[in-house]
Image (cartoon, rainbow, N blue to C red; front, top):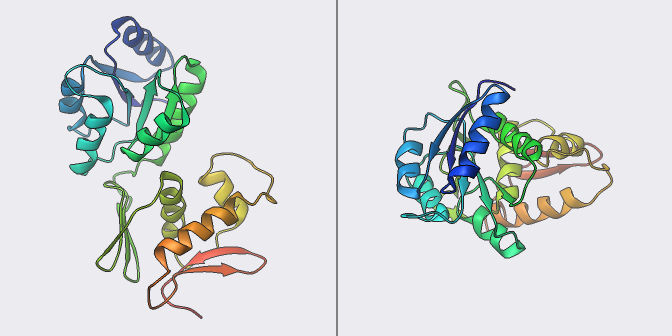
Length: 229
């Protein structure tokens, strides 16, 4: 994948220079901001394919910066880089609106692979940014999900799962398709990770509503559609 436009928000100038050089060597365009306020101003343009954001920044914290972007419906994918690598730290980063979280120190090859995955997920100019199935609505840019007047709060993986199902509304989506497109890995199809997430998602988007939208197609996979057969 070539020709990505990447914004690096990193106050450590040596680390930022290293990333700029590394990204340019593999054919990408990299721009740098050295504090959160400068990063926010550049990111608001929406001209970047991916943002690589350090968590601890001067003038405006990285998570606060991401939160402002999401509140303004800027949906550019964000990879958070941080020396804070504990599970709770990663969860906070993802809940703040980050799409991925990579603890420091890291290998550039892994960072590059993760950035490329995020760039592929970004809606293209002709792609829908809002999906609707019945009274369920998902906004790909603001990461908001509503069913009727009810706001539904999803974890990042649940959001990606619902996004993929709604993109293929009315079609059977197999377990293998979900593993390859939502998890980005080739898991053993017998793993129950999908069942667990489908169950959680169903409880959030269907429980308490008049009709179910998320259906299990026995022996085939899953389907999201308006109304039951």
